[in-house]
Length: 206
Image 1: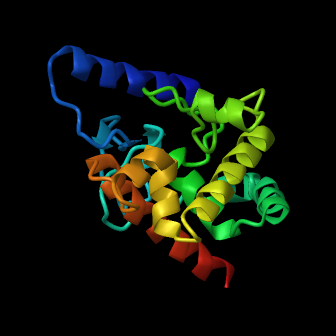
Image 2: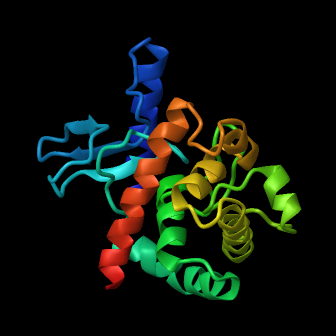
């Protein structure tokens, strides 16, 4: 029954798009069906517990406002992988969780329009650079992403904001910007989003 419900939701979304109705810029879609059978949609995270996430755009960057946390179940599902990779490569676990939260929302099958894939949304060139053979394998993907974060932190002398900007836009874009956050709207929104997640994961673990 869950499959039928989800299928109906996506069919409704498709009809909206086909009719010329503008879907929101933020592509995360929440939905619930009320007691009359009416399906409600929103693109804004709601305190109403009836709303469930039914569609997430990988790597979506809604802006620098406070981001909503992934579910505890999603975090726990990959907790051991994240902790193992973080310890092995010497990267703050909270930062790794923050990047995964912003990039894929813990969806190991996430695929962006630009071709970034998996939990840490590795681009094909980055995956090859770090020896990731199965980009959708959570262990390989996370280890590759954490190695990339480690190299970015080293390149930018431990400056987390620049490392995060490099993760989103590429290290060369940060260098071309004079070792500042590049003036791309996506990156300008992405960095505070990840930093917000980072502080919340630090508080959560503390």
